[in-house]
Image (cartoon, rainbow, N blue to C red; front, side, top):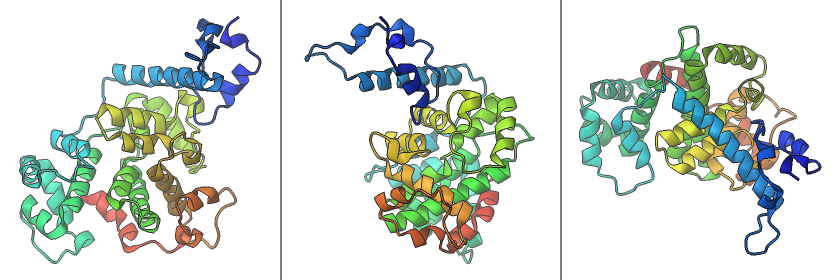
Length: 327
């Protein structure tokens, strides 16, 4: 007897929250997979989870392996990402590496001298920017410049609108991270790249990407709708790309779990911030929360509900300018 023949397994797999890749290979695994021996027994649900995750991973990795236009990021940006949580990073070495990239340096100084950061100074070098803005702010801006410059979707795709929304989510993540007492730089960065999976689809599957973009305009908070068209979510694809780029695993998990953070086996607080930030961006300034608002998630992060709908901060108001400066 095979796993496929077990009562209710197929229904369970189809309904499994957070996964939607078809399990067409289940019949190849014998019942012995669920061995009853105490020394090697794997709980049935655990075994199915592992198999299901493996199937989804195969689909995503195959897509990435065969993509001819997979975006790449500057090496210095990759290094900054890999060392994001390293408090002992050599700042002087990073400054020299950034300075060697003329495009990144130009974008950084354009933002550093803009009203977004005060605008009443003349910064002429990466070292000046680090001195006046601080290393964390410069690192975040360089990451933003590197990531935004890596993607070149079809001309028909509203790239400016995409990054404007992404920066709005990033700024909202940063605002909420203050209330939840989480790292604001990590929250901002993850908020910025939370939907890179959609951009990748626009590049390697432009036809399906255009269809999904049209659908999204009518229901912006309908998480995971793309599963029906792609067989996986933007979040899953974005996490796979993040791992290809050697992002810290915590960042990849934040991207991966953003659609339903509370359903994840290991709760990612940053994924929770992204999820709430999407609601904040959609409903900030409204008089009341929508009926589907994830109150339990806000409570888990210890964020008072009134903070979700409070007027947007000064940083959030300037995201359009920031997106333009980094374009």
